[in-house]
Length: 114
Length: 115
Image (cartoon, rainbow over all chains, first blue to last red):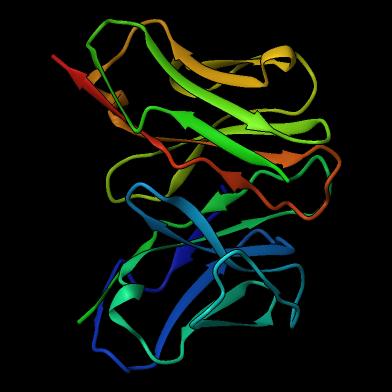
């Protein structure tokens, strides 16, 4: 089974802190994604990566950065956390190619910024 | 640009009743379409996907969806709701043949099942 794991299920941070959210997948997928999920807004893409050291901005990249030093690991970084970044963060991965576009999701990290 | 519209942010049905969750898409090229389910405090799980083969797609847990190009719709149905179906459901689209794998998600429909 494909497994996508996220480092924390629940996280509480203070305004201004630097926050790292880690995601690891064990299926050798090329693509990895970070979304945030808010009630009534669905899933919004923050960043994605097609390969190691490659990254592309999604729809809402402001206030976030990412790192992909190894193929299996994709990190989301909040440089200076703010209260409006309180949300559920979901990581996903997929293969490359037109027939392999199903995304596999991790369990999510619920981040609260106080 | 592609987009997905899910009609109804909340749908409530009685146990044993038909489940119908609506999804309309806009895409300038033939799309791939997906339904995902999210149970409370969990990530998203794929229910089913349409990738230009049969227009009626069967998924897990008794769900199915029909691709109707003329209506640009991909509605999700289940003949008889079960209490365990209570969850949030997301429709998603991506262009067929696209290798980047980006999905555009709808805003979700929360399904409640009454005993």
